[in-house]
Image (tube, rainbow over all chains, first blue to last red; front, side, top):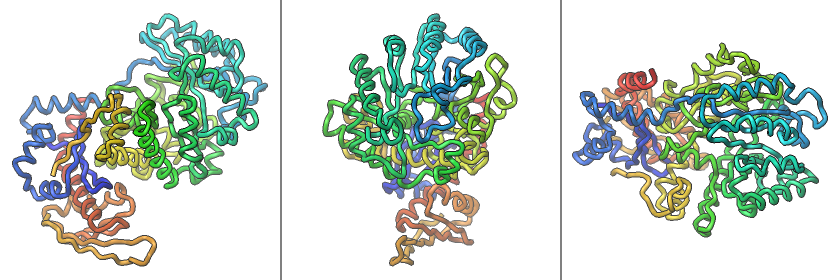
Length: 467
Length: 98
């Protein structure tokens, strides 16, 4: 009998059993002992059989059905339809942790030259998909509204278009507003927790200008046009309630809690940043618990931690999203590409940072050239978590992903034992926390989970329990 | 695996981190799985460790005795399922990814 389950003892005293196809149940210790002693009862077997957790090896239909469900968990790289474009590296701010990805406001040689512009347009013209998503990164991309407009106009042939401008919202003039007025343009900005922390880490005395611009953007277009991401210093995190209050005061309901990701020399100066601190884990859990309490108190607004919701949907709705930071396999240089200010191509934005900081050159080549060369081949050969000895024993494997670039950034290599990597430890803790919540009977917890799954908040049983 | 007898002792009750130790029997037929489970236990459950000695396993960790026993049972079952299903799992996956 084929039993494609992996087990993990949870902190709440139960044992989680996860099928390779992602479906799961929890049990008490007695069930595990019965399994170990080959003394499963009639009810136990009936439960496992009816949920396809046990499949006869002669049952070809059952095995095919299992494969079908498993296939839904695997990423099939679509053709290229997502570009991250860096039209300029220049920026009008000088934030404490952003050194490798910016150049001075008046520096020369940090914007696309004519040849790069031509090749970017040619790349867009070659995209065969009926839809396109473009994220403008920098530097501060709004310093070149002319280039943004040129790219957007080149994309008018696509049936579905979405442009995200990642901006510090520091200086908005008529040209920037004209871009933002487009219905297919969205804005992603940074809001480092509360405004005091934002001032300390980013905008200093000019914070009032940023605040006024963020409010003006939201008033003009509504919150659905804007996302804001906080970058948190785990050693000096801002007060949780103040962070949530700040976001809620702008009407922003999705908070992507990110720990500072030091790159290059900054990482060398902050060697401890290779390891996620216990401080961060504690802060993160307390933050989510506060969101849950708040959602229960005030049902008018549902606040979420963005990445926890991504992970939750990886468990229950694997087909519902396309989050390129958490998928398996994680094909690089396939469905999305980064074009830097100098026309170099990268598989991810982090790869661009790594190359700029001199850690390792992960450039796939120059725009206009065939980028599927040795680097592309090497990266993609190792882009799955499927056959790793640790991952193949991990109950969370069906939900998890693979991040080669993060391993290279932190350790300079990709063969560090998986459970010793920050990516693994972070995700093991996240999924452990999620299953703790899934099996928490508190109605406040169940309400938030349902809403984060985009359900209506009515009580639903998210997990079965066997004893 | 015989059903274990709980043999927990708090060795260092006065220390900041209370290290707990549990000794459980291991059936001969489970010895190979137990050795592997012990190797992986610290990776998946930081703060806990297992040493297999002939017919028993010695578990130590900063969790309580009940938790250590639960971890061991889950780890041993996981290792057994991993070994028993590995070939078919790989075959089915290869069929999908080709």
